Amino acid sequence: MAYGFPNADWMTGEHDQFAASIDKFCAADVLPNSERWIGQGDVDRDFWMKGGTAGLLGASVDEEYGSVGAPRSFEALATYSYFRSGDSSWGFPIQNIVIHYVAQYGTEEQKQRWLPGLVSGEIVAALGMTEPGTGSDVKAIATTALADGDDYVINGSKTFITNGAQADVVCLACKTDPSAGYKGISLLMVDLGDLGGFSRGEPLKKIGMKGNGTSELFFNDCRVPRASLLGSGEGQGFYQMMKQLPWERLGVALQALGVIDFAIEETLKYTKERKAFGKRIFDFQNTRFKLAEASTHAEVLRSFLADCIGRLDRGELDATAASMAKWWSTQLQNDVVDECVQLFGGYGFMHEYPVARLYGDSRVQKIYAGTNEIMKELIARSMDDD
Image (cartoon, rainbow, N blue to C red):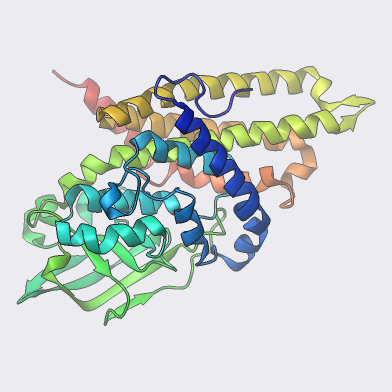
């Protein structure tokens, strides 16, 4: 069974070396800690800097900001490789999304302030879009940031925020002009350090991804400098998000493929070791057919995502392809993991087996970064070109 993207035309020896280094990093620094992170509800704070040193944060950022200026495919490979380890606690894909908001839209002062720390892992970032009453409807956000002298005054709340329990900074979607609808949305880089009026909710209790500190963020008359505005002017936030969402959705798809590959690998091992009725579980036709189907689906997905990564490197990844990748991969992820749990039998329901944890972790993939129903709607709109 193939792993990664061995036949992709963008793969080089450097990509191979990078993927191998992530495998070693996961074996040495991730897997020995996975159970403890799940128990404590978050990764260790110093682990962020270990991940930065390993090159998983912002690999494509220019060297002047502390990275290596690699093609975007290296970041895509980092996401896939990490999730193929079987761990889902570390919310670094969100950090990489925020990094690209700053790199793409930030002023030089903002880049100098935020990028080196984000790339090194010294600074932890969250993405503040989802609100209790909005879900996937980004246009309907209610959080406001109203100008008052040299400041913005922020009021509102965000929920389901990955890295929310540890974040030092949040890229916050808010309305600087509530009367303008979605054209009044702006993004602010908000330093949470000693921010007056800011508070975090208790870590949210989830059915999966329990090792990531997901929380609510509350803003009550929080004053931040107007220099926090990301971009050339107010009202650019919605367009900025639409430009960056394809990368976010491709990232979710890469997570899905990583999980699929790991689940199949674990199930192959188990079914070749476990016996029933005097023979290996793998020797039953149903087992062989189910794993053959899963492996075939994984290879089809791998080819599509390899093409998407190539488009990403060329600056050609569009919203339609990213939406297709997101919905199809996450649906497939849930289907494959469900079949793998079935092949484990009763042990597939036991938390000590990684496949059981994957079952809980996978479900949210069809919800965040835009629900799969929204993905289908976006795809359908692209077909209605009359």
